Length: 613
Image (tube, rainbow, N blue to C red; front, side):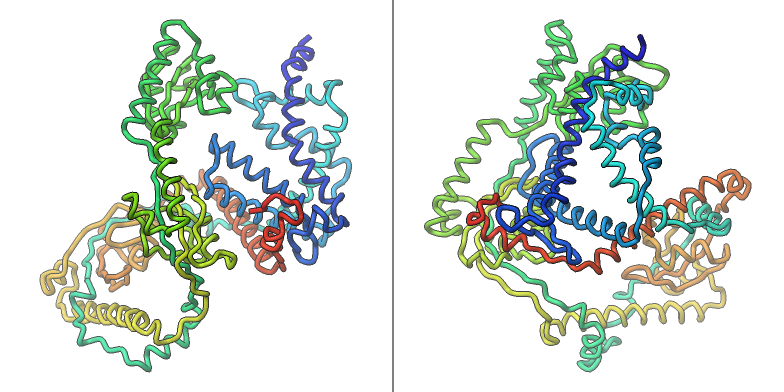
C-alpha cells in the first residue's frame, strides 16, 4: 500500500524527468548523428583540436544555457544578458569537448557494474533538486527507488539516464585521477589554522612619498624610459577601439512605480485576510517567482541565519499563520507567510511582485525611442538628440575586451557591434538593452589594435618610473629617520618627523586593514615581527609605513588538535579545486579552436539558418 501511494505521488516525476532529459538527449544524439553530416543546414560551427563541431550541437548548447539564465532570472533576458549567456555557452561547449577528448585520449571507460551502482547510489543532480523526490525539503531515497520500480516509466527514459551516467562517470574518474595525490601535511594545516584564527594589533606611522620626496629629487632620463619600454613592451599593446555617439533611455522604475506595486501588494494581502482567496492561490496567480508559485509560494524551512535582510527580520516577527505587510527587496515587493514554527525554524511561503515601469511610462519611453531612431536614421544621432531635447554623448570610447561602458554599465553587445568590421562608420545601431535601460549607438570611428610606439606612451612610462623612484626614496628617508633616533620607537619617530601615527586591529591575516591594505608587506610583518619591536619601512600601495606589533592573539593549539581533520579536508578540497582549474586553463590555452560563427552569421540567410549571435 505504501509503495502504491509513493508511486502515485511520484508519477508526475516521469513527466518532469522526460522534460529535463529532452534537451540533453538532443545534445547527445546530435553528436553521433551529425559527425559526418554534410554542410547543408547543419554546417561546421567550430573546429576544436581537429574535431568538427556542427551547428545543431552548438545551437542546442546555446539554447539550454539561455533557458537556464532565463529561469534563474525569472524573466526575459536583456540583449546584454543574452550575449553573456551565449558567451558562457560557447566556452562551456569548448570545455566539454576538451574534457571528452582528454577522456578518450587517456582511455577512461566505465563498466556496467559501475553504471548500476551509480543508478542505486548517485542520483543525477536535477533529480536531487526535484520536488518530486523530496519529503519535507529533503531528498527521499524511497521515492527515488519507487520511481525506477514504476512499470509506467518509459524504458527509453531509463536508457537515457543510463547514457547520462556513461557520460558523467568518466568525467568523475578523470577528476579523481587529476586530484590523486593531493595531501595536506600537519604543518600546512597548522599554517592555515593560524591564518584563520590569529589576530594582530599594531601602531604604525604612515609616510606619504609625495610629502617627503621633492620633485627635484626624482629624475627620469629618456634613456631610462626607453629601457623600461623595451623591458615591458608587451604591456603596451593597444586594443581595438571604436568611438561612438550614444543616447540612453533609463528603465529604472520611479518612486511612483514602487508605490503602485506596493499598493497592489496591500490589496492582495487584504483579499487574503478577508478570505477572498488563499495565500497559495494568490502566489500561483500573481507571484513573479515561477518556481515557488507552482507550489503555492512555498519556499521550505529556514532559520533566520539562512535568510537575508529584510526577509530574515520579517520572518522572525511573524507568528504561525501570519502574513507580513509588503516587504521591499531588490527582487520586488514581497508578501511573506509563516505556516508553522519549530524553535527558530519557520516554514515560509512568499509571493513577489516585481517593480517595473508602468505601462504608460513604457509607452512614453518607447515612443521617444521611436522618434529618436526615426530622425537619427535620416539626420544622424546628434541632430536627432538636438531636435528632441535628448542628451547624446559624443565621446564614448568602446574598447575590445572591456564590456563596461561609462554611463551605460555592461554593454558588451554594443562593443561587439561597434568593433565588427561589417559595421560602417556613420551606421546607426538598433537599441541594445541591458540592466540600466536601452542604448542606441552611432559609429563615429574605429582604430585597430596594435603596439603603442614609445612616443605615444613616453609620458605614462616616465610617470610610472617617477612613482617607483619616489617610493624607493621615501623608504630610504624613513630608514634614515629611524637610524637617526636614539630610541627607535613609533612615538620617537612621530615626534622627530611629524609623520602621522595610527593604530589598527585586531585584524586577521587575510583581512583588508585600513592603512595597511590586504596581503601587503606590512600585514605580513604584523604576524611575523616581534611584539613591541618597531620594524620597517614597508611598502603599502602608494605609501610607506613603519610599524610596531602591540598585541597578537595566537592560535589555540588544543583547538587545532580538535579541528585538524576538518582543516585538512578543507585545504585538500581547495587544493584539488585549484589543480582542476589549472588543468582546465592549461587545456584551454593549448587547444586549437577555430570559430566559424562570424562566417556563418554573414551567410545565415543564404543557408536558411537562424542568426547565431
